[in-house]
Length: 148
Image 1 (cartoon, rainbow, N blue to C red):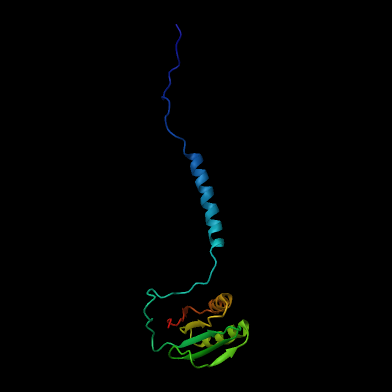
Image 2: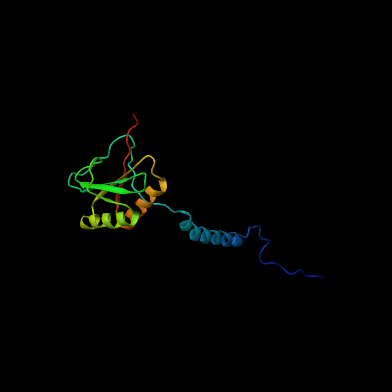
């Protein structure tokens, strides 16, 4: 008489998910490493409603920075948004950054508005925004004019 060895457990009908978990963790690490490298830009706070003017604090200092088409910069410092007058100017981006940072260093809550000539290059405006961001400007807005 032949005796068969008895199995304590029957055959398993489960799927082995360990390899899938390993692959998932490798992909997670890859995405976590590459995601910060993919996003590049200048952080600004845009208004939530595009059609209405933003309310401003009257006690806040406002610096209106204008970018000219030839690459020059000029600005006005005051208690309200002023695009007609000029407090100071700069020929280069570095000079503008140094002078504006001196103004912002005195009052860190300074609201900065950027307005650019229609023919000024997009790169000049973004470069100005990057210099302001590196200098510690946290309140930044863009000024446009309504079409006529």
